[in-house]
Length: 78
Image (cartoon, rainbow, N blue to C red):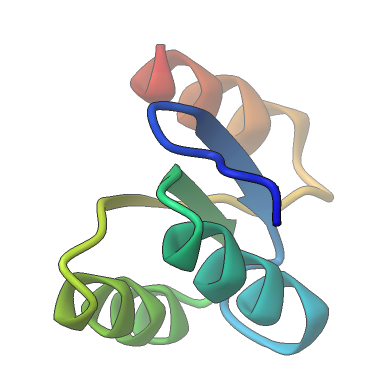
């Protein structure tokens, strides 16, 4: 099994579906998961689930249809 400990992984669409599953799985493998989604409530829920596993996650509200939203979220992450 691949270990992602000490890695930082940015996942878009992390509030639901495949993005959510990738976020939770990456956290299980030790990654610090950076969550992007346009749904703030969904982000907070996923971040809370990751925290329950004693893993790290940071969440940022970002709409990938909006270039300014992407720039803003990217600047926050950096």
